[in-house]
Length: 260
Image 1 (cartoon, one colour):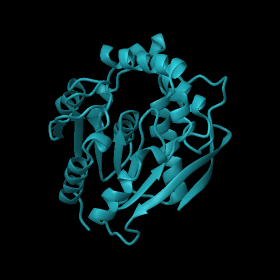
Image 2 (cartoon, one colour):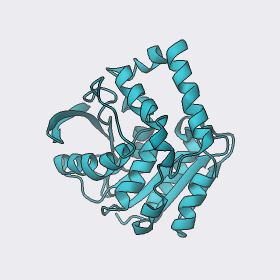
Image 3 (tube, rainbow, N blue to C red):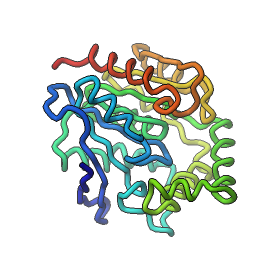
Image 4 (cartoon, helix red, strand yellow):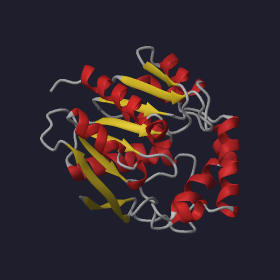
C-alpha cells in the first residue's frame, strides 16, 4: 500500500511517496530501491516487488523529491551539481530515520545508483547493488540527455511521463537542466568511493546509451572487491530489458552477503 512520509528538509516540508513490498516478516536487511533520473515509484513497474517476493526480502520503494507523487520541485528552483550528494547525505538519512530503517541494502539505478554509492561512502549499509551507475560524466551521457530534451519538447515524452509524475515538468527539468549545465561536466565522484566498505555489485548493460562500461570498471578500480556484471542485449535499464537475469543475480549477491 502506498503511503506518504511527512518530512522536513532544509526548512521546507516534504511529502515523500513510498511503499513497502515483499515479505514483511523477512529477517534479512531491508532492500531500498533508488530510481533513475526520470524515475519514480510507479516507473519500476513491479520489479522491486517481484524481486523481494520471490526471494524473501522486504523492500522499500519511494519517489524522491520532485518525482512521482512526492513534493514537486518549484518551477524556479535550479538543482546544483551536488543534488545527488544532497539526496545521499541529507534526504536519505532523514527518510531512514522517519521509517526506522537501519543498515539496509541499497539497489540503485542510474542517478539512484550514484546516490547509493555516495550514501555508502558515508553511512553504514549492508551492501549496494548499483545498476548503470554514473561516477563521472561522459560525452555519450550528455548526447543522450540532449536527445531526451529534444524529445520532451517535440514528441509525446511529456505525456508519457505524466502517467508516473504528478508534475512531469518538475521531474524532467530537475534532471535534464542540471545534467546539461556547463558546471556538471566536471562532476566526478571517483575519489569518494574509497571509503565504501560494504559488498558492491556493479551492473551495466552492454548497450547502455547513457554510459560506457568504464563507469563500472572505474568502481572496480577504486574498490577491487566489487563484483561486476555486464548484461548482453541490454541498454540503460536492465530491470526492463533483462529483469529475470538481474533479479536472479541481485538476489544471489544479497543472500551471499547477508546473514538472516
